[in-house]
Length: 160
Image (tube, rainbow, N blue to C red; front, side):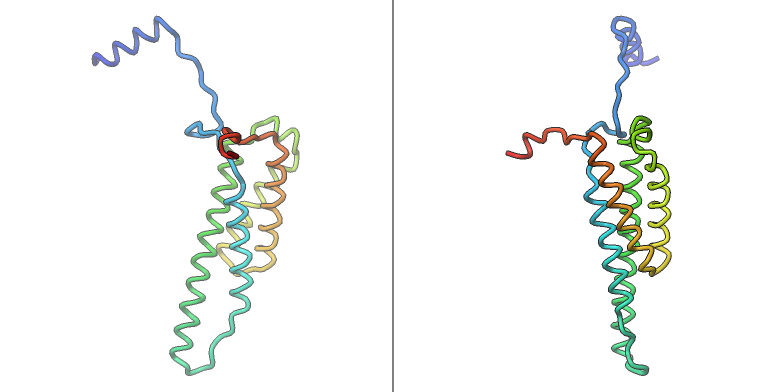
């Protein structure tokens, strides 16, 4: 046993450690659905733009390359933002919301489940209906979050 381990054991006997409660892995206590909302909006906007892209005339090599490049970049960013949306949703779901919230908002579990599934669908497809529903679900979730009793720590410092 190291000196450090022995010292910690003695300290634990003298003053029992208390249990710490936190909503997240590192207890910062700062939660905000804004990144999720921006990500869902990006997914919707890029889906609309992809569907509006006009393919080039056959035989126009330069236009075909430009079209492919633009489509590939839009798809990549759409997929990245669908993943951001899912990650932010799950962080709020697993770190902020607790059983009393689920009692207060009984639709919450199903909303999170369906929203996460929509995020996956938006990554897999260029589907306007799914992108619109993702956007709507994220906004419903953000509204529930706003009614859940969360207040931003240090809000007075940030306002000044």
